[in-house]
Amino acid sequence: MKKYFLDTSFIMALILDSDSNYKKAIKLEYILNEECYINNNVLNEVLTLTGRNLNIDSAREVYYSLIDTFNVLNEYEIVNYTSETFKIFETYIGVNSNKTKLSFTDSSIILTMKAFNIDTLVSFDEEFKRIKEITLIQE
Image (cartoon, rainbow, N blue to C red; front, side, top):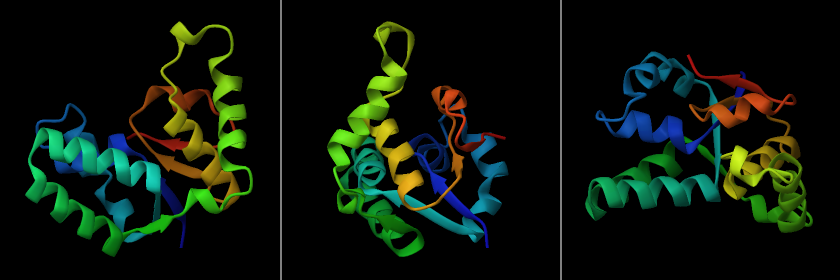
């Protein structure tokens, strides 16, 4: 079975039918039958955005659905997690921080994927196209 890491943008597009990527996400729904992973940072983002865009009851429902459906990786088990994530963040931000939208959380996703040998990411975040070490699925 193939391993997929799911980004916040994909999960939110599945949750919110008003999301601009909703139709693309529905077409990729078949991936959910595979071995899917998220980390605590993605869980945090999804719950925050769900609570903000819908309500706390929806966030609670999404929380239980995510932890029951996906493998939640604990990125904090990675040795030197924060400093290693910062190295990735620094590499892609460089001196032109205005020219990238790659976030610290995105950097943590890259590190988590490397640490747990996951090479495929499902995301609608265009910044991930710059990361040569991963296979990005957007459509």
